[in-house]
Amino acid sequence: MTDANTELSPRTGYVVCASADFYAFNLQVLLDYYQPMMSPHTLGLFLALRQQISETPLVINAQPLSSLLMQVNEGFIQVKEGLAQLEGLRLLKTYRSDSNHDSLILELQPTLTPVEFINDDLLSVLCLQMVGAEQFKKLGQQAKAYQLDLSNYHNVSHSFFDVFKVDQASQSIDDPVIQQSRITLDELSNQRVERNQLPDNDFDFHFLAQQLADQGVSAQELQEYRHLILTEHLVYGFDELTIAKLLAQSVDLVSGKLDIDRFKILVRAQQSPKEPSQFQGPAKPLDNAAVSSPANNDFSSQEQALIKACTQARPLDFLTQLKQQTGSGYVSPAEKNTVERLVSNLNPAAVNVLIWYIIGERGNASLSANFADAIANNWLQQGVSDAASALKAAKDYQKNRQSLQSPRKKTYRRKNAVHEKLPKWAQPGYQEKHEEASPEQAAAMRRLLMQGEQQDKHKRGEKDESSK
Image 1 (cartoon, rainbow, N blue to C red):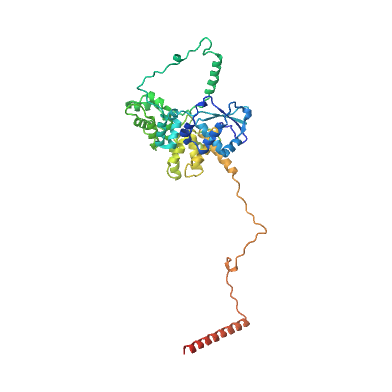
Image 2 (cartoon, rainbow, N blue to C red; image 1 turned 90 degrees about the vertical axis):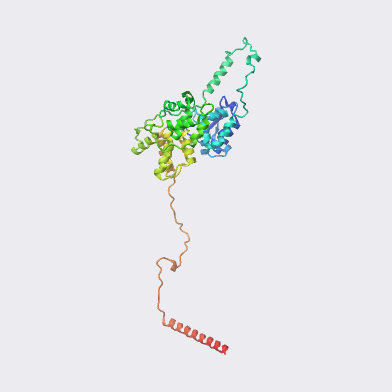
């Protein structure tokens, strides 16, 4: 789905299959731990795909995506976004053959166990953002359900050979049936989705270990949580000193070990520093891409400067500065959540270009989650991996958007239309005309006046008689 050459349409065929370890899938874990990070239509999409798993899936039995749209009662764009979310959550892998571009293979992946989910850096951080600290604590407690502290007990269980006797003469582990089954399953297991590899070229773990040496935190323990530390560093732009301070506050006073859940909560509550620490040194690129202006004729000098700035800045800092420059107000908590979610799926430099396009180019006052997610999913499908490719995708998107806008419609008057005329006195420029009366008209007016006067005298005489 993230291949730049992938073109989907409702006519694209698809086949649903499952990974070799899909037996470990747990519906309750999906609802409790994964569902808060999904859009409403994504959960229904996964359950619909799960119903379509066949024991013997065949490519020749591929169905068009239009049938899936009808089943989930969603539009094509919503289904594409849902598939991308499932891929990002590592619940789905999508394959396409080089020889057959008309069909997709959708391989469903199992859920992690609750303990594995809590220990997963990206999933746990994203889940914490979506559900909040209190609910995340409940999920942590739920992961320990049905368990009992057995540290003061001895394991007296029987071993395998205490109970079973295997006839080594008739069967052995070298049996070709066993070996072939192992090889087949190993090949399938090796195709599991890999975790995102986060760039670490601008973070000094050796310096971090030195700062925490007095706190009893070993370098080995820091390496254990290396992926989580890099995630928070990329999302919030925390330098080594800030990370060291938060880790020191997360050390459990009883065990002397890092309380990683407390560390995540402290990071979530900590505001991103507006300026880099004086010990941090000069700003460094977000990834391994060179920050020099790209030698590409497709970009103007201003666009090359934009690419360089997006490669050097942290997403939250970039958003804050851009909103200040454009007078768009402050960065809201919802916008922070949107940035964190974008960074967990898209290159940070590309996220900066996305922020610039929505607020700087289009003039929006805020970073709308739905709009940002729609563009990010589209860029992932195009294979956007850095600031340059993101800017090119943004330019292409804007060009296509303008070409789709219909020209202003011309208005025509109907020939037989009935138009209501205004009275002369209401028409603009009207002036009242004064005409002289003819002799006949003047004589008639005098007679009317005389008659009126006689009638008035007669009425006054009647009133005087009645009063006597």
